Image 1 (cartoon, rainbow, N blue to C red):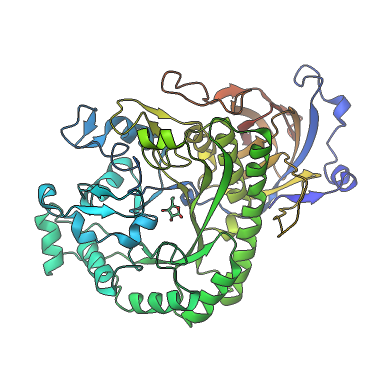
Image 2 (cartoon, helix red, strand yellow):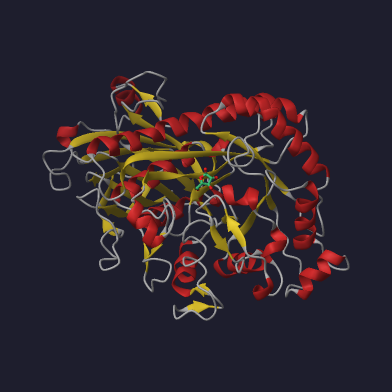
Length: 532
Ligand code: AHR
């Protein structure tokens, strides 16, 4: 996490730092606030697992149908039914893991409905997302082929709420058993002779809510029973994910861990959405500040949930997974009718939110296994938007570019960052009204001769001059990219798709031990430094 230190400590530690007044005027404008940061390349946190940048796609609105999948006979350019533009953009971004088919949908999904000849598949009602008829034309094979196309590892969410242990057991055998069993042969007859080798399996989704409204001990009993029948087949070792809390619900986590009675899952999944009280493109300053400030509570939740897991699992064998996160703004009913449920525009504010999230994952790298943004296309904080399910156009949102800016951190080791005057994560307590303080957010990672530093300025009304002291490395050169827009409600519209895109940004190394750069209001920037 960001370590908070006083100005005095800061000055003592960062001996090479100069006072703000000495910052060259040519680089920094005059009316900016100065921020001093120490990058402790000599103090490692943990691996930035590429899986922190994973995604989630649900049968909801136009995420799957119309977003990812347009069908083979569609006039929209497609690769065997997958929207071509989406495949290309996602491949370029790199999606480490993709979770499917829900969400709430997962605990009402019966996988057998989605295999075999498409025209014979059962038509079911999607009860969670509008009672529309789901024709199951996108099923297991279509999902796994999509993962193959974009280079993502699949993560299947099993049905506990309305399913059976047998159903989950059979789905695993269908996907992973090499050959010779009835289920493996059925898979081969349906087009995949080779096993899919799916490693990640969710044992239910939000079983405290749409996945069955269970109490923790009830869910734990289901988990124990379901996982008696799950098996590793061939070379695939299963990674089973138990349902964790809603936000920072410690009562749920403790209750589940107690009642699991030693049957430890491989992963424990929490969900944390950052709500917004305004429609995506019409945020007021107050609503935006409240939403962006909620990332401090997310960071606090990760710390507390990990600490609780540690009491049951001191060697941290259980991976803490945040497999649904992202901004959830107020929906516009008209937009939802036209474009699908939970269709949400992505603005400069959402990009800043993405940057805050990705920064905090780096800072908590030692506590996390995987994080999945909700959702991939057209739903909530998506990286791609299409102009309706029938729309030809597909744009990369500001979120897409924020993820792109963090790609350089993947597989590097996160290192500590000290930010002068930064506040520790402060969750809002019941009945507490706290002044919302948004400040510079920073994270850094290091590998071989590269040091990568990401910065987020979440203030809408203040530019920042950032002065970083580099500890434990000596830097030779730096290059930076920035995502920024003076209107925080601006977005990549279909007729102005490049409104918010990364641009090269000035960043200067001084004396091998300082990095200087400007951060305009509402910006996300990443600097890559060649270091020795
Ligand atoms: O992402 C939308 C919904 O949010 C998911 O279906 C559910 O898991 C969560 O409540």
